[in-house]
Image 1 (cartoon, rainbow, N blue to C red):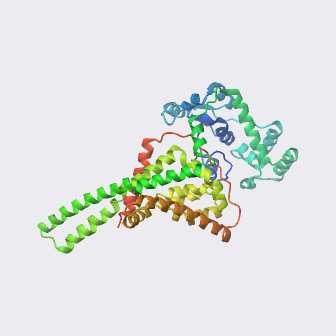
Image 2: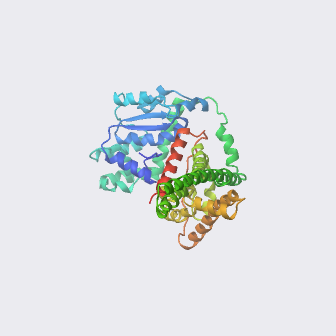
Image 3: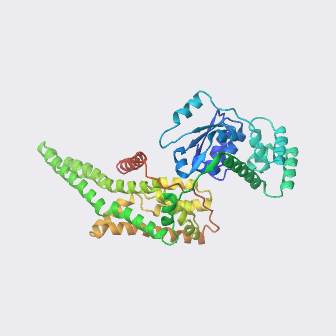
Length: 451
C-alpha cells in the first residue's frame, strides 16, 4: 500500500490505504516504521490497532538508532504496545529473514482491543461498539466520534446521542481530542522504552545549515541546477554528442560503400543511410547527454536535496498560487512531461493541481532538451552550455509569471499548505540510481525512436 502517516484520509494515498484495509479480507498487517522517529511513526500504528487485524511492527533503520544516540528497549516496547516487533534494516537487509519466519510460522499476537484513550472516551467507544454489528467496530466507533462523513451510514439516534454527549464534555473539536490522546499514549510508550543517551549534531544538521540558509539556499540551488544543465549540454555533453556522430558517420560511410558494391539503387541506399541510420543516429546522438542529465537529477533526488528545495521554495510558490508540492512535478518534468503531469495527482487542492498540470510542460524535458541543445550549439557555438542552463531558469521564470497571471484571472483563492518529510542526507544508492537512469533512458529511446 502507499506510504502514509495516518488513516485520516487527507490525501489520495491515505484514502486508498484506508479503503483497502477497511473493506478487504486481510490476514495480517506489516507496519514498517522508522526506528529513528518512533513518535511520528507510531501514530499510524495506533489506528491500525483499531482494525481488529493482527499487526507486526517492522522496526526499520535499526542500524541508525545507535548512531543517533537512541537506545530502544525492544522488550519493554513490545510489551507496552502489546504486539509483535521485528527489528530490520532494509538498506543492509538484516532482520528480513526473521520477519519472513515470523509471518510464515505465525509467531505474532492476534489482534486485541488496545485501550489508549482516557476513561470517558473509552466508555463512549464501548457504548458505540455495543450498537454496531460486523467487523472493525472500534475503528468505526472512533470515526463516528470524529464525525467522519464516510461513516454516516453507521449513525443511529442512540449513537448520535452518545457522540453529542462526548462533545459536550470535551467542548473542543473531537478529531483534535482523538489526535491528542493518541500522541499522549505514544509519548508514554516512548518515555518508558526509549532513552536518548546523547544528541550529536548530525551531518544532516550541518548540511541543512548551509542548503536551507535563508540567504544562500536559492543561490546554491541556482548554482547546482546551472551545473547540472551545463554539464549535460555543455562541454561534456557536447563531447559525447560529437563522439556518437563520429561513430554514425563512420558507419554510414561503410554502409554506403557496401550497398553501392552490391549494386543497390540510389533510392534504397538513401533509404538505409540517410533514413534509417541517420534517423536512429539523430535519436541516439543525444542519449549520452540525457543520461548525464538523468544521472545528476537522480543523484540530487536520492541524496535528499530535492525534497529540501521544494520545502524551501514553498514560500515563493505560495505567492503565485502554488505550493512546494508543485516543485516535484516540475523536477520530474525535466525528464518527461507525461510522468510529471501524472505525479500532480498527489496535489489535493483541485485548483493548484490544474495550475501545476498547465504549467509543467514549460519545464525543458528530455524531448525539449535535444532541441535546446541543437539550437544552442548551432547559434551559440562557444556558449552552448551557458545558453542551455539559462533556458532552464528562464522556464522557471515563465512558470512563476504564468502562475501569477492564472492566480489573478482564473484560480483565485489561497494555496494549500505544504507538509513534507525531510529525509536525512545520504549517499545515493548505486543500484537505485542505475535502475532509475537506465529506465528513463530506455523509455526515451523507445518513445523517441518509434515509428
